Length: 94
Image (tube, rainbow, N blue to C red):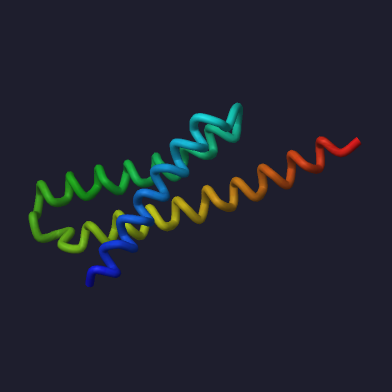
């Protein structure tokens, strides 16, 4: 159980660190696209709050929902980083 907790904390922390890195260092359209996983997580959090206000038993596994969406956010940001680096190296070659 401790291993699961540590993994969850690492995934969420990794997502937040990666998200801040992308929003601070990337410019233009890359910054906009990098904000999309954060927007998605925000919408999930809003849905959890609204739904549990209506029915307190509707999201009993909400920590796992946050964990899943954070993990997907890390994957999306990783793919964006790879694409960004690949396109930058192609355009910088003479």
